[in-house]
Image 1 (cartoon, rainbow over the protein chains, first blue to last red):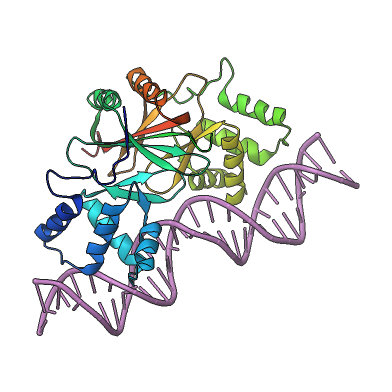
Image 2 (image 1 turned 60 degrees about the vertical axis):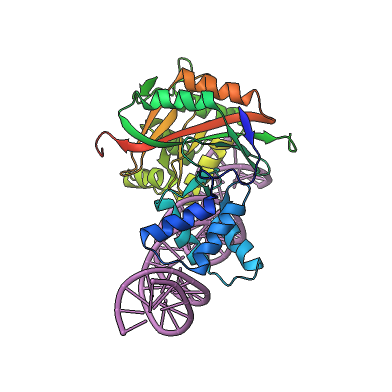
Length: 155
Length: 155
DNA sequence: TTGTTTGCAAACCTTTTGCACGTTA
DNA sequence: TAACGTGCAAAAGGTTTGCAAACAA
């Protein structure tokens, strides 16, 4: 089991996730706009998951005039392409983070008091999930795990 | 691994979950009202998780004049007492189901196409989760697992 | 130029809250 | 009766959508 702490561990092979996402958008034939690049850059820079509102606020405070709708539309586009992963922390707000390279995979510890989110990775857990996935009458394409409790500071 | 199919497997020892919940409410000192009993009964009768809106609609179509606010307030009360579990299926709507007896525990398969939810139970998965919980700097009090994919009908 | 993308504002949906009225103990 | 619970309506978020203007190819 491993706590995920590195900021830019969303790497796809040698290139960064942001470069990979940009290329995927070009390949798909969508236009390359400053707004989309800004959302991709914001996602790449964040430590863990962030909500659309948080991304919007950060870009705005950085001088951008981006609208909240464009943030949602870009996140939906990236999510549909599998480039971002949606994380539900249980407070009714959707959060997003860059999808990791194939094979890499992490889950979240959510503090029920302060809302802090920490990522972790565990092979035993992944194996147990795959064992379940192999035995159900579902074509399982993904999974989420959230452990809830009190973080070190709140305990 | 076991698919959870029985309707009333929320039993607390010999008595049903609804009886247990009613007694817990009395013990807590809250008043016993027709509205709360109706919400408890609706929860006990549902096969898997249901949203507040669904519970409200079902009670209304059964002749009740219950308001949506009372459904939310009762669910919040029961959730705070640990009598109901909140389930996030990823569509931004909170769903609720009776909490199971100690030790019993299930998770969900969510169809990304039709939204169907199926419950399952797996000891290996529980063990893997507890192994992680023991090793993190979090006081883990609960966890959720959701496997996403296509159900038998949608595949 | 031509179709795509954007920001704004309004619409939508779920959930929460204020308040006067009803109910329980 | 005195405190608690309820229904309604309004408010409060987060998210989506319609549309005219801005933009990329």
